[in-house]
Length: 198
Image (cartoon, rainbow, N blue to C red; front, side, top):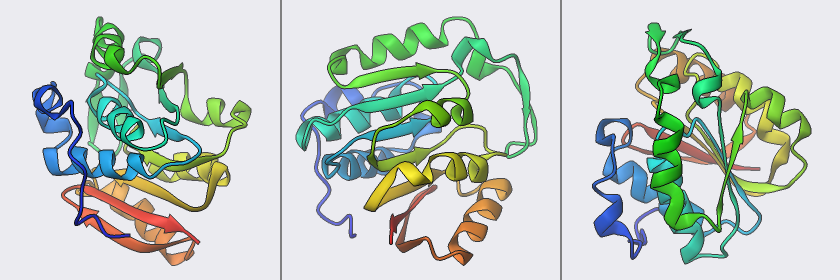
């Protein structure tokens, strides 16, 4: 699956200014948009934060089949925690107003974006839809756990993407997943890495 012919969404002029730019580089965001444009069943994003990646995923979905984008995040319900991937305690993800920002950013895609507030693994246990794009960008020390919880929902030929491959904990989990040969045709764009389900 090559990303050479990436689609630029009509909303790009607005999307490119979304905060926070450091959390998602533009080449990563546009790649997510392109991947979402090919989804036929549904998309799950783990770790939605302020909604920038969700907006690009939804924009891509709209360019394609218009499938739902399920955004899983704890937002303000999770107290500050130590993210083992980052290596320190974080509170920004649960700060006051983050969920409101997410809702405002994704409002233009209200027909597609479906926030699921809670812990990823808990939600995965009761989620019963097939998806063909899984984007893992939550607790960086638990990327492997998120993968295990959600992989069964990914259709054959679907894509699993991980963000922040520059972090040691994420690289560790991705290496372990690669060894199991569950995914093929791995591609890397910036700090984003993705593979196709065999």
